[in-house]
Length: 169
Ligand SMILES: Cc1cc2nc3c(=O)[nH]c(=O)nc-3n(C[C@H](O)[C@H](O)[C@H](O)COP(=O)(O)O)c2cc1C
Image (cartoon, rainbow, N blue to C red; front, side, top):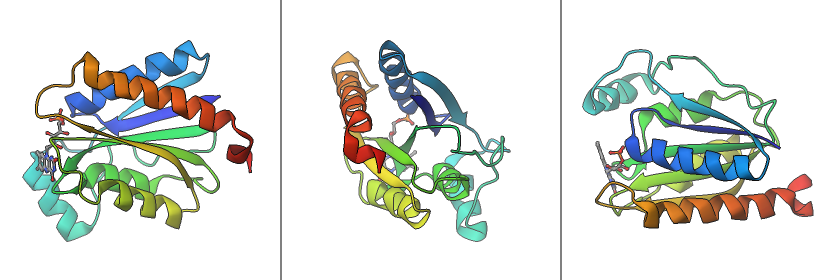
């Protein structure tokens, strides 16, 4: 299995979840690529929001990603105003070769994910991708081992889902 884990680079909680998932996937013998997503120009969150409202996108530092060589793509975002961040929304919208691909989503927030998963899923559905599973991690503090145990469980469940016959249609 070849897996891509993409997440908002400047989010500590996203990075922690991505690191935990990577460890679990590698234990399973999956080839894992981690892609911290950055904007071309680093800005404060409110500038990103403003730019996104105007242009409907944020320029990505490394440009569009191609899903072609991966069997599973995991995408993470912090929740900003009940939605995925402008950066990760752009990343999802611009991703190439998503048709028929399996995706898994994770979001981190203080407690109110709103429509984040739904918004990400509908972008992917429009791009003919499949969403195998999603995880919402809520915490007002930095994610600790107890919270990260949910990420470990999520990775194990994905292994079951990815290896099940239904995932191969
Ligand atoms: C601009 C902004 C908007 C946010 N909106 C929400 C929200 O709607 N719901 C929520 O539960 N948390 C919200 N948060 C909290 C973040 O989701 C939370 O701080 C993040 O997931 C924790 O990771 P990080 O700070 O390491 O990125 C918001 C944070 C910021 C900066």
